[in-house]
Image (tube, rainbow, N blue to C red; front, top):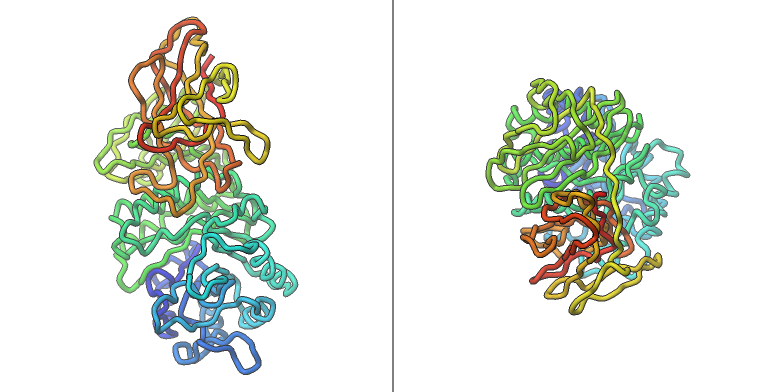
Length: 525
């Protein structure tokens, strides 16, 4: 937890303004609420190295140097962090005035020694200007990203200094497959959220990306969803609270040193004091810093309406996050069955209102792009649902049009190229003794790159499902990972229209765009 200069100040930072932000971290109470890491982004770097080749700070902007900044931050009982890059220039240096500031490429070992000597507690290594002098961000580098970051990791380990190491390559080359936990304490899962006019779309994109990576959080290693966007005008007040709430629950920490990333980037001299109060909410911070360290995971997506996410806490309770994607107020019937529960005692963690014991469904009024944060105790589980699985490449499924079998790198056969007129249809699906409405699960693969951004479905693909020729139901599938071998398991929905016995048909299609590659469907027995 902490503060970063990157979004609020870009590359235009100096010692006076940064010390002012440190002072405000203290006087506002943010420091005492847990925001203890103060990070400089772009602008502290010099345009040339020192005569002996070591990394040099911008002496004009920071006359006391980084030693002086570190001492000032430490004197305020906070930790001091710096940002460098595994390339030639820092991120944000697209303006000509900043284009020559130095990076750490080919100097990582020496630079770590310099940074540690200055007294850093946190080092973020970005990936801008990594190889191509004409391209600040290369999404398809022709070299190993992990090997580039490994050099700095090894240098930090060799230094013996207790430095938290964060890396940011926006999910390039599938960090989970490295595995990233062997390379860094924090890793950025995708592209920037903050600093863009379409910030809400980027928040949704990040949520879709995180759906496939929530499982990877563990002691000492956490997914970084990017900086908290506040005070920059890219989000409404409600959207700011939604981002903060989701980020807090997405990254619970159980490691005393390496806290999960809940990092603000704003000019504290201009921030609404009431928003500062939101960021200091002790209930939210307790969720973020829960000692169990388990993240929330996507439990149910109601396409074009809302998501239901949940995760366990150390005391045996469950935290639930419900996000409203509609550009309108939404009355949500929160169904406890989506979490496998019959009943629970529920508290709203934002209002601290006790909703008492509820059975089956709970009506919740949620503002445009708003959020609900609930804590569940005294939970009564319902019997687990059992499913009959039907592979997409198997005797019960036919492929039509250009849909075709694809074999993944792990040897799994899937139905690919579905959509744009092509579709798959399962037949002889068992509707059980009674038919009617049933739970259905879908296993799929969807690994579109960050560059495939659609405002209505960022980092996702859409499809339509129908049972026995009934109405089409729209589905919105989040990313399954960064590789077309990564499978998302048990995407949950409910469908009407089943008839008794093994005579049912299920069709998945999309007339205008490609669907995910399909692995199988499961139908409630």
